[in-house]
Amino acid sequence: MKSFLASFQYSGYRILWLTSVNLIFAVQMAMPSRALLTDDMTNSAFLSGVVSMGFAPALLLFSVLGGVIGDKFENRRIMQIVQIGFFATSISTWALIELNLISWQFLFLMSMFQGALFSFQLPARYSFIPKIVPEKFVSNGIALLSSGMALVTVFSGSAVGFLYGRYGPSNVFLIISLIQLSALFLALYLPKTEKNNSVTENYLEEMKKSFKYLISNKMVLAILLSSLVVSMVAMPVRLQLPIIARRLYMITPGEIGILLTFAGLGAVFGTLMISTLKKGNLRFGLFLTSAFGLGICILALGIFPYYSVGLVAVIFFGAFEQIRMALSNVLTMEYTDKKYRARMMGFFMLNFAFIPFGALPIGYGVDKIGAVDTLIIDSIILITILTLLLTLSKSFRKIK
Image (cartoon, rainbow, N blue to C red; front, side, top):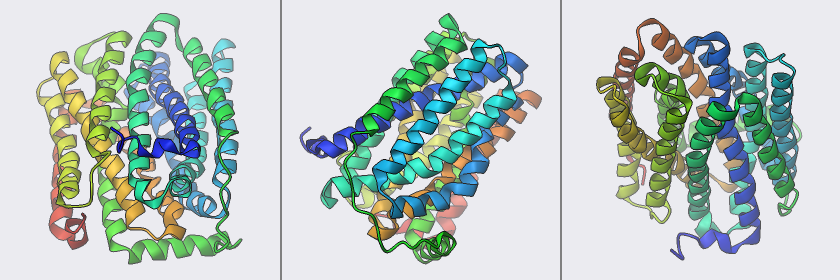
């Protein structure tokens, strides 16, 4: 237990952890709430997918720049400014619902704006960790942060299911706004860190350097490619889970909340497994198991469209999702030079950009051919592409 909580002995890390967990709690509540609200207004899984993919264009545009900014400027200032933006999106959504002026187009714009914010926030967050804990605890710090985010996913899923069904979307977004405000307050106490003076003011040139470094670092490139595949094919199922569950099981918002809670519990178990994991072949085995395991879980959801089976499948899905994500972050940090860490995390922001692009065909498939066939096809595509990548990429097989 002591080794598991090692990074918490540093006050700067504790504040970063609390700030990040509050932010992710609010974001995890907002994403399914926007999907449910869009579905309520339009009765369209496709338009729910459109709203969900709103942040993708901004991520594609700003992720690399966000990494450069994260390497150049003080991390805490970036996180404070970004947190103001997140609060603004939540409180404005609440206000328009209250005024009866809300529309799916506005929700799409808010998703897009949050995508831009994430482009700067995530690289700053993860590159912050090596600056406030010793190098030997960086992996532990990332795992603890992943555990915290997985834990709040448990509560956010049940909170959305309960609050949305009982009190409606207006109160949900008011609560989200208050959580964002608390994250902003905590961000004011983040510790100062040194700037990276090696990063110039020529941002276009720095972005070119980032691309060159990524191409030259075959290990990080292999990790990124595998992550992009999973993000494009598997993660949209998690994003669209409230809508898919409605179609598969004909269940209430409260029961959807239970389903999301089970997925969150699985994520907690997943991060506990890797928090003290050392270098070695076991990590590569877990990385592969988690990636292929997601495909098996999606297949199970499609072949056995029963709520009880779904509860079990999402537990494993949540565990595999968190193991893969946390290991991707840890491995990227370990295989990247210190001065490029935020920039490489900027590239990994593309994972989040690819999720909503995958959500669009998932939503379209659910509308046109049904949830069962869509899930089966999706799982086959994922397993096939991962098999090809494992077979063709030597660097991928060298991960330890």
